[in-house]
Image 1 (tube, rainbow, N blue to C red):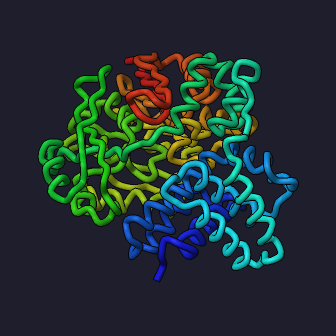
Image 2 (image 1 turned 120 degrees about the vertical axis):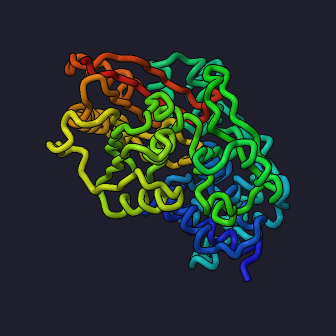
Amino acid sequence: MTTKGENTRELVLETLLSVEKGESYSHKALSALLDKYQYLSKQERSFITRVTLGTLERRIELDYIIDWFSKVKVKKMKPVIRCILRMGVYQLKYMDSVPDSAVCNEAVKLAGKKGFGSLKGFVNGVLRSISRNLPEVSYPSEEEKPIEAVSIRCSIPQWILRQWREDYGWEKTKSMAESFLNQERTTIRVNTMMTDREKLIDDLKKQGIQAEKVVLRDYPDFKQGLYIWEYDYLLKIKEFAQGQFYVQDVSSMLPVWFLNPKEGDFVVDVCAAPGGKSIHAAQLMQGLGVVEARDLTDYKVGLIEENIARARLKNVKAVKWDALILDESLVGKADGVIADLPCSGLGVLKKKPDIRYRMTREQQEELSRLQRQILSNACQYVKPGGTLLYSTCTVNKIENEDNTAWFLENHREFSLAKERQIFPGESCGDGFYLAKMIRRL
């Protein structure tokens, strides 16, 4: 029987090691773990989720604290020991409900269980020293070293903060960095072909699940979102299994809402997996017309098909296609094209905290070139008078505003109808960018 003790912490450690070694992204590793151990109690699942994500989102600060007390610096430690100490320090600093003695004892047991018995004393010494002396840690002054101070406090790499400061100024940069440390609730989009917000709220509350309407001051007509909390496991919610709602951040709902597809339209989503925007478009079209949801691999197409089936939609079809290859059969055919393209993901660090440690400026530049290639193909599918919707879930000008400016300069047949950079921490949720462009008649 797995308990909230050694075994539960071992599951956390396995997940952290998988991410540390680059074998998996945190959201995928954690989702797979929770799917595998569905029998765990709500308390155990909550513990695993919080320690895993908390350790990742606070990693720079945790390393700073460990280095403050340890003679062996974090970068020189074995990955297993590094991860054990990080998750231990996270519990000591941010989880008052866990006794310090339990944190230290279980960390020592983990080290021994993983074959590092000779380092049990080291692990014990470092954690107990931190437990006794944590208030003594001194952080850099934000007035004297703003980048370094915010990088440590918010665990955002310094190069990202510098990029944001250059693009958006220091106050916006600091606000974004701090927003990723805030608690967030799950956001869902209501399938209005099956139910409405009021009924879904009532149905969820009967199961002890709290829900409230998403209200956007800038977009009062947006009435498709709900916040939900106090639930255990998504797949156990009957309404989710029935397709009455789809888990999707508010900012991710806005592109299709701005696209505003009509009944009978033909819409192409060129990088569709897992299918949220395609399904949203199909629902706004009231099941009439066709949405073609495309992606690169069988696995991604399978994800799209799974979500289409749950939503019980007949007007969406999943197609395997490489967006870098022009499909001559679609040229000039689409009323709307959704180009929600691969990006650096810096707008969703709350959900995918490890992205910040993997991404580089060089990778951003590669992604920017990829985005331009895909846009140059996708735009050809748009009929005169039709709409191209470009979006990313990142926050930087090289992938967003600069790409839109480049596209409009090189494709004069399009004009810009709407452009919006949504910043993390705003009422819309995650960081997101969208540009709505119309093909001239």
